[in-house]
Image 1 (cartoon, rainbow, N blue to C red):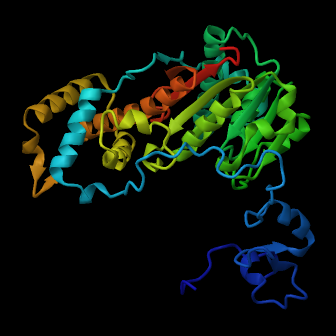
Image 2 (cartoon, one colour):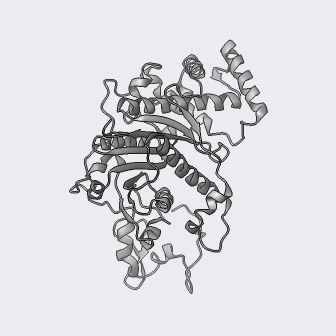
Image 3 (cartoon, rainbow, N blue to C red):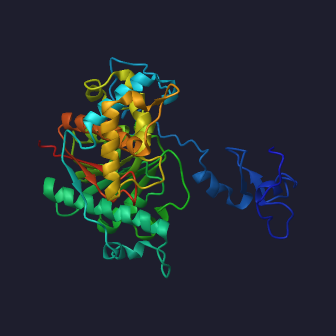
Length: 409
């Protein structure tokens, strides 16, 4: 189709790779056959039944299940609708300047709740979870990066529960991981709470899941291949056996975070609920799903919502590190210059900013969008705080949202 040769390795004693062998062999004799659900990819005839169970083209029918309610986690409809998304290049320079100045006035510190910093993760902390790694192999740099974040999230939630919930352990707790992917967050929490029940929700299947490890460790869990917006967590039958529910999600992108917050607010009406969400990808937020609409319209026009989401990407789109000691002086100098004379940054009808200043404005946009979500949780009776759970050099998306609500409160 692309008029070029395939780069895949041919099968043993064959001329073609596994994908193309089926196209050049009689289908009645070939072991490789097109997938009945999606002919664009192939599987082996001997493993067809197993493949159909995990194929992403398989549309599981959950509509008859007690935990399925269409759009149950979508934020309540707002009077203001049809907010259009436009790229920054289509926005007038003056409107962009006004938005940036407002964000600079707002700053990078939350105006609604406390921001804490988790203690740095040591090698001893990671070694405690050594059984989760492949035996006899060193931890690679990529695995170490994710391990540092997982340990930090477990430590952050543990400290938060001790201070705000009077819980010293995860006993009698059901964990819910929305946007679970491979389920690695649940795997690390299971190491600390092996008697808990785990609900993993994702609308796609992925390879190298932690499910196999769960089964070997005889962990109680269920995986739902569903969209988060349709999952009524309280309807999962196993959850009724537990007093507390903990939503533990890592890097839940954009609007998926808002869906998770609505789900947690609904769950808290029936049992104690704790929320730990590592926030990310604010540029993927949508007006329809965003839970902080009321907070936003107190500071910006609704039409500026997508300006904020686009500007938030400035905080993570640069490879360089801007957090060295001297760079803070550069940021402060750029901010002062921009405030005093923003027109000097206009070149050929475009706003051209220093990268340090762009990074800072991006952080301000993320902080504001996070505060809108925090206000939603506060309005629903939760205690809320933010935590910088790892250093920004480990992950630029290093902010976690922590919430707790007792059903008696």
